[in-house]
Image (cartoon, rainbow, N blue to C red; front, top):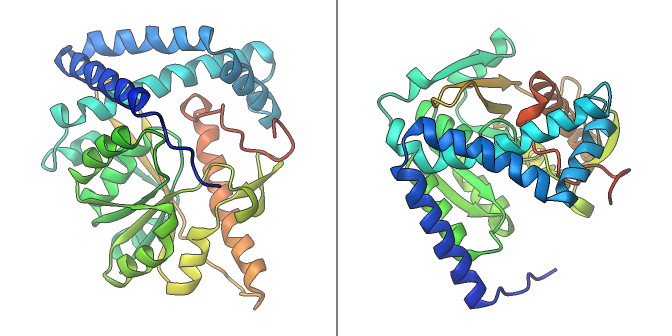
Length: 303
């Protein structure tokens, strides 16, 4: 369905309000800005009833909390986490550059095979998720491994989208909108680049049916399709925040592949899609507070 064009007055108001907020964040010292981020996240949790309620319901639905009190604690922390991710992105270039990037990351590989595939493959399809700091994940791949083409959906506010696109391009990232994804992804893979696709949101009728935290979910299958078409190494990675000092643990899972191809294309796509969906779930379970629980991710709740 075609997106409704945003009123130019509202678009500009949102954009210039964001620019003002960004400038304030950039001039604040690190400790103060993260203290305020904690306060703002908790305030949003109180004021945003719709997303608060949905997040708590989803946490209980996924079975990651023992009771409602625990679910509320996780949901509140995830709201705070989201605000801190925004601060990370705004202040990123004040603390991290291509020279010191590696000192801010600890890398954890799922296995020795994962490590070898990460460093030695000719091309990659990199699956991401809204876990940890997903913007930093793309940066880590583009600087630490090879240039990456990041697939993104268009922002509702075009000017805000252009701002975040410019931030991503600072670190060897190319940007491609979803509607042009397949053609540009194939071209990037042929050039030996990585292709990054976030695959933890509801994919609707275009997705494939997977199981996520024990419940049915429609999942983006483009990473699996690209792997089958090109043979590019298929991995999942996420940068978990360790503190408010731009330190991260970058976890890598995979490579995901078909041990015994069935010859049935849709079945093979489902097998691969389930593999990286399960890896996303496994990483979220390490720290549920760092995922966005307000996503309407499942088919059997809040649809």
